[in-house]
Amino acid sequence: MTFMKLVARAAFAVVLIGGAPAVPTAWPAEEDIVIRANAIEPHVFRATMGERVNFVKRVDLPVHVEFGVDPGQHHVVQIPGTGPFWAVFHRPGTHPYVVHIYAAKTTTTLHGIVEVVEDPQHPWAPGTCAAFVMGVCIEP
Image 1: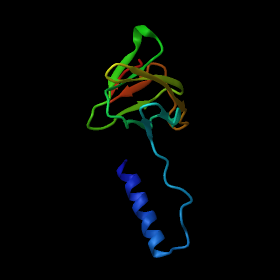
Image 2: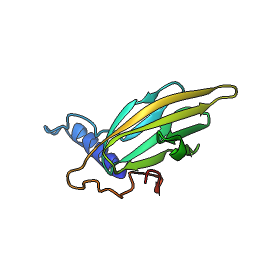
Image 3: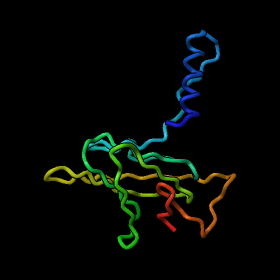
């Protein structure tokens, strides 16, 4: 969770405790894709260009996330056991990914999508890297 989200939640708690009349209607939106043993939540994640998206595993098994639909240009990332990994998408459109969860004798395969909407203030330009994972361009 980002520092700003923590500050927003703390401010919300202070408002609730203090009894102030203006109370936010909802918590700030989470920016996490949660990988469970049998599901990805949410299956379709909507983000704005340039927004950081965290991939968090909630299963105590090795997990790989594969980006890209072209088998010749796919990129595999192993989620570390100590925390999430993140991606930033700079091209609007659909970015599919596949999750592989490795158990002792089986592999579970799950599919997800990141739908990215264009930021009018920062339009995508051809030649710009479409997606970064942990700071590395994976979709030139």
